[in-house]
Image (cartoon, rainbow, N blue to C red):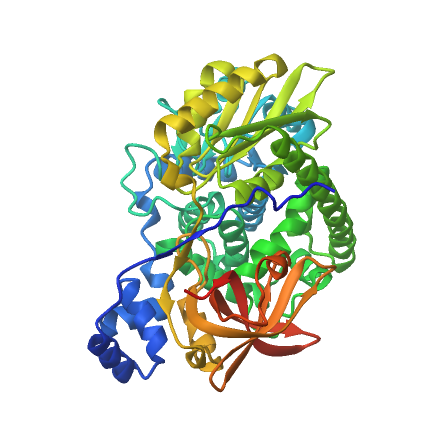
Length: 580
C-alpha cells in the first residue's frame, strides 16, 4: 500500500490577526451579552462595534445589491422576455458540476413559472466536455430553440457562440468564471467579473448570477417575487459546493438558502437529504452541503450523465426523486472507491519522482484515470504536498488528455494555466481550480512549463502549509454556549472560515484510532475542563507523539457532533503538536 502520508510536511501555525484589546472585547461582550471568545472573534473579523456585530450576526436579504448593476443584464432580460411572449423555445444550458446543475434547474423552474417554453441541457462530462460547446448548440438546433441561455458557463465559448449565430440561435451568457481578453459575440454577457461591470460584489457563483437575473425576469413578467425565495436552496447548494467566498452577498444567499433547505419544496433535494442521513429538524450547516450533499449530486456528472442531477432537482414526483437519489447514492460509493485507488496511484508516483526542492508545480498523468474524479484527487494531492497540482487522464485511443487542476492559496491557477496556453487545446477556470484538454505528446512540455511558472511566482515559504488560527483560549471557554452562538457567524466556508482555536498545554486522554485505523479520537483535558476530540486522517500521530506522557498544543474547531439522533460537543482537530 502506498504511504500516502509520507510526503506531508509540518505545518506552520499563523494567527489571522493581532490580538485585540481586552477592554474593547469585554465592552462588546457586556453590550451584546455574548461569550468573550465570540466577541474577540467579531473584533478580529472587522465587526468591532455593537452595530457592526449585530449587522453581521443577522444578515438581511434587503442588503442584496440591485441586479440592474450587472452589465448586460438589461439586454438579457429584454431578449428573454421577448422569447417568453412569442413562445420561442429556450434551451437552458448549465454545466455538469453542482453549480451548473443548480443554475440550470433554477432558470428552468423560474422560466416555466413565467410561462416560458424551456428545455434544460447539461453536457456529458466524458462525451461532450465542459462549457458551452458544439453539443449544446446541436441540442438547441434539434430542439428547435431560438435562444440559448447559459448558467455557469460560456464566458470563453467564442466558437460555440459563432456556431449558434450561424444557425440563427441567439446566445445569452450568464457566468462567473474569469473572462478572456474579449467576450463572446453573444446577445448579452452577464458576468460580474467583466472588466466593464460595476456590480459591487464579484464573488457570485453561477447560480448566484442566475438568481439575480431571475429577480429581473420576475419583475419584467409580473411573476411572484416571494416564490423566488423558495429557490434559495439551489443558490446555497451551488454557492457552497463551488467554493465561492461566503462573504457579502454570498453569505446572505447561503444563510437564507440553508434555512430554505430545511423545508425545501424540492422533492429531489428531500430525497437526496434522506439518502444522505441529513436531519432537517436541526440547522443544516455549510459543511453538510459541501461534504455530504454536493458529492452525491456531483457523482451524477462525475461518473455518468449530469442530466440526471438536473432531473433530480426538477423532479416533482416523490417516486421519481427517490429513484434518482438512489442512483446517486450508489454512484457516490463507486466514486469514492475510484477516488481512493487513483489517490494511491498518484501518491505512489510522487514517492518515486517528487523532489520538494525543485518541484513547485506538479503534473501527473496516467491512462485510464477517470476524468470525472481527477479534480477531487488533485485536491487530495494538494492537501498532502501543498503544491499546485494538475492531474491528466490520458486516452491513448484519441491521443488526447483531459486535465483538472487545483491550487494553494498563494498561487493563481488560472494565470498559470493561461501561461501554458500554447500547449493546450482548451482551458478554463479560476484562481483555485481549472480544467484543460491537450495532446498526450505535450504533457512533458506542460510539466516543465507549469513547474517553471510556479517556480517563478512562488517562494519556499509559500510551499509550507499554514494552519490559520483565530484565537488562543483556555479549554474551559470551548463550551456549548460558544459553539451555539458561533452558528450566527456562519455559514462557514471559503471567505468566512470556521474559527480555529488553539489550546496550549493540554492533556490527551483515552487516545485511540477509529474509522478502520484512519482517524484519531481522544479526550482533551485542562484543569477541570474535558472535551471529546476527533482528528480525521490523523491516526499516524499516535506513532509520532507519546500522548500519554507529554502535554500537547491543539488547533481545533468547535462543533456539535450528531450521532444516532443525539448531539454532543466536540473538538475537530486541525493540527496537534508537542506543547512548546
